[in-house]
Image (cartoon, rainbow, N blue to C red; front, side, top):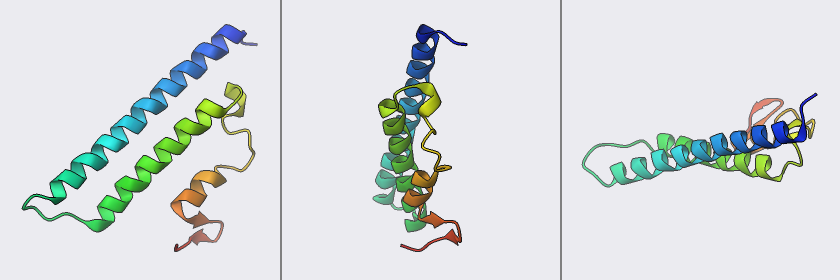
Length: 97
């Protein structure tokens, strides 16, 4: 069984990784938005995809920061339902918002 110190270090590392992922997603979104002001064509679907990716990264980071310990990062037992809800997916497939 892991000690409390090892669990705290693992949680810190996971939180740092998620924060890096969030920063990356936000930067990609920002760059794509800037690109849309230029002469090249951009896709509204791609913009929405990048926005959703940034939202999911933010949700993952928030859940990791508010979880009491490493074992509860997905301990809600919802099978990732919160992330599926953000993406607009349901058990029947992809729902349209």
